Amino acid sequence: MERAIVFYAGWLGHYVADGSQPLHTTIHYNGWVGTNPKGYTMQRGIHSQFETTYVAANITAKDFAGMVKSPERLEDPFASYLAYLKDSHAQVETVYLIEKAGGFAGKGTPAAFDFTTRRLAAGAQILLNLWYTAWLESAIPAPEHALPAPVTK
View (cartoon, one colour):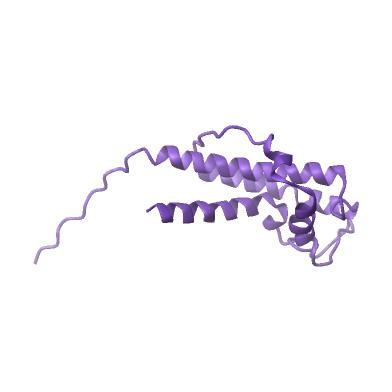
């Protein structure tokens, strides 16, 4: 049972962390697709430049740990997660604007650092809240389900 709990907690962690990355919520996940009036990059690679190269070179957990607060019980975990994804999606163009200004190159810019640490903190916070809610709800006995009538011959 404990192994299953750790497995599913990790699986949830993967998808929640992915949700903090705005490019995971759009068709523009790795270069702008289609009509592009603002001249955003259409080159493949923005995805890994932002979430891998830039983060690995410039961000540590200490940079955003203070932004993560004590866990809160979520009244509706699914609705809370959808709101989190919607908020992340609303920031797709911010990623492209920062990239266009050179914010994710090398040491990056203060705007890139601020944006990235806030996205990482948002992911950590919702995951913490989801795990905490699951832990609290694990103490509540499951409702008794009506058993089906026995089959008779």
